[in-house]
Length: 270
Image (cartoon, rainbow, N blue to C red; front, side):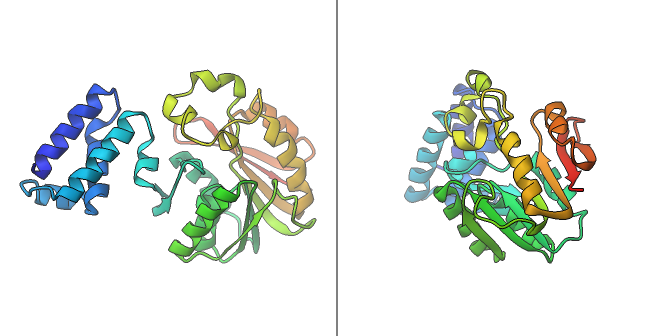
């Protein structure tokens, strides 16, 4: 079977399984199976697939057709121009979370804490894009293992600590706290896309029945951890209620994403 035929058959199988972006997905899976990039696939479209490539490609197609996210099948996801390892132990980094990074990069700070780091995408990006000392926490040891692997692979200096939010850290230790907390309401679980609901970690998705449970603990925890005048930045699910939780903070603002959706809340500790 040639590369071209493999792509066409993969595309057809994915379309029959109602997988969106079937052609692109087939390309990504074949790139992973062959360890070559897209340019190679098209430059060698008449080449025969070796047996090992076909075995891997078939397995990847089967996983995706069952509903497993492409990122978990390949074990990779790009974020802020870098490739991160991902697994079912961590939330797949989304492009919209790059708005959180961009907001953080507007601050010239010496110390940053990322609470609930998951894959480490935010903490590692900030460590590589700034001169700040970056710490990151997560309650999941499996997630921290993935984050540490990403930090080593990308040569990023990040200190990782296993704890709930910032429970293991001292008062007034940071200039900036960032977080992408779980904020999907538990009552919306049934309406989520199956590839999200059935494969991504519930701990990183759901913020209680109303989606606000983690914010209720995170905001006062950030106030404890920040130095006076320090900033808190959080990705948002529901902006009005979260803003009301920051009534005692100053310079509170909401940053919209490119679609005009409220995406990041920024607040400063008095």
